[in-house]
Every structure is written in C-alpha cells, then in structure tokens.
Length: 138
Figure 1 (tube, rainbow, N blue to C red):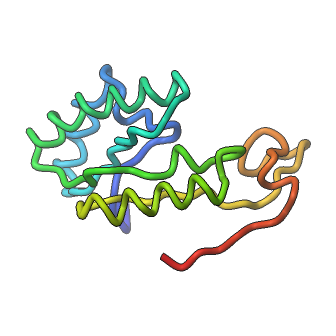
Figure 2: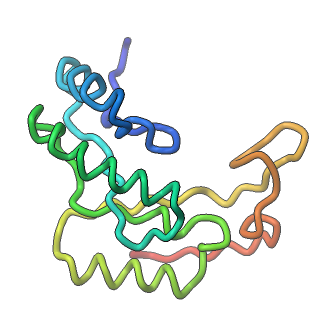
C-alpha cells in the first residue's frame, strides 16, 4: 500500500459491529491508523441506527484499549435523506456548540442517483430529487 488510510470507518458503520470491532481496532493499531469513526449520536430514532449507537458505546471501550482516537459525538445520521432539514441541521449545530467536545460532522453529498447505475444510494431520495442543496459554512 503506497499511502495508508488516515482513518477507519465502514459503510453503514459496520466497523463497530461486536463481531469484528476488536479485529478492526487491532489492525488499525497495527498499521498505525490512529483515528476511527465512532458514530455516537443520541438524536437517532430509527431502530437500525439506535443499534449502531449502542454498538458504538461498547466499541469505544475497545477503541480505548487500543489507544485509538475518536470523536466524543458524531453528527450525520440525523441529517440524511428526509432528515436533511434546516431544523435538524440547526439542532446538530447547537449540540456541537454546547458540547465543547470533539465532534465529527458527516454529511453525504447530494449528487443525484441514476436508477440504472446507482449513485449515492439505490434510487432517488427526497433530498436529491429536488436538487436544492444548501451549503453552510460552519
């Protein structure tokens, strides 16, 4: 590998799954990749993402064991697809300001999906159908 990754994260946050998190952390440390994503977001309501947040809380103990660096709070799950509203973005920004902790702010690009070849998902979403993307300087 000519250039090593600067951080670890996984699609749908698979890297925090209890069956593989220890292996991911050990390999991350072995290759001196010291930052790992910790999707710890209390604002989620969806059962799938609540499960990920709960798995993350357990994974953080393993990340600590391997001295990996991760953010205290993760914002991004709550601002995807139909949740990408001005109200939710404002809530997230208030949390960042109030927490005074290391926070990772993830956002998915709003490029349109092609129903035949894919894109940011497997089809059009409400967010990218409109093609109205709002940019904020944080």
